[in-house]
Length: 282
Image 1: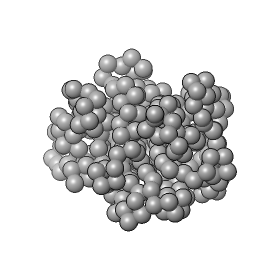
Image 2: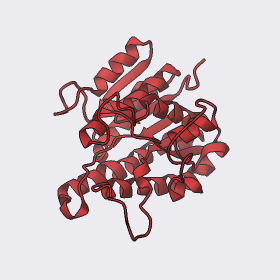
Image 3: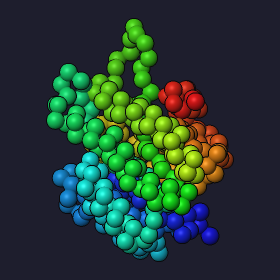
Image 4: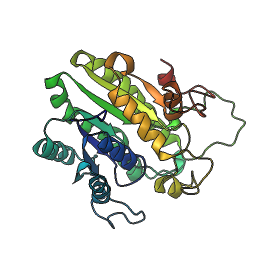
């Protein structure tokens, strides 16, 4: 019996990487999974292989149930459409994973204004809109789980003076993820009365995905500095299935959570070797 038997889960950013791994694991655990992504078909992305339809095909080949919906989470009409099509195909939504992301690593002095607003629209406005759109289903049935994917970039460099060479270009992404962690705990407090959990999860180390390779934070799937993508999927499953009072408002990291639950014996990164963000420590 799967941990998500009978549940309907919407996962954004499922064409590749972390979102794809989460969608596949949730389907293996019995969920009917809606794979949301801008890249519906192979070739839709100018640089990367992968698409929502490919992820769905692989889920179905493994015996799972899934549906692909082309969605730009920065557009309210797309978010409305994703929820409406999910309701039509599978019924009320039980789980939402806000994973879709967009950024470039550029110092603030050089950041194109248009891309700054684009990044905010996907990384901050998207999770807000998708969360708002699924809440009626969850509030009506007094249950549900929302998981926001964050990043260790949300941990700021602290107060100066600064002696180390800065990780130039990550200010924007870190600020967005810090906002998402605050959004997570604020929403968790708001919807606790309705039995809905809201949590946030970041990788403990860089996950080796096409996106991180493109941004230069990994060298590819075999980079020994990274962590396996299934760590994030397994940690996500914990966060959407644990009891409300045990988990809601949790802002955590993949390896810290997996170690806490006995799925790994050793771990690295924030929450284990060093403190996480301020929100993870509350």
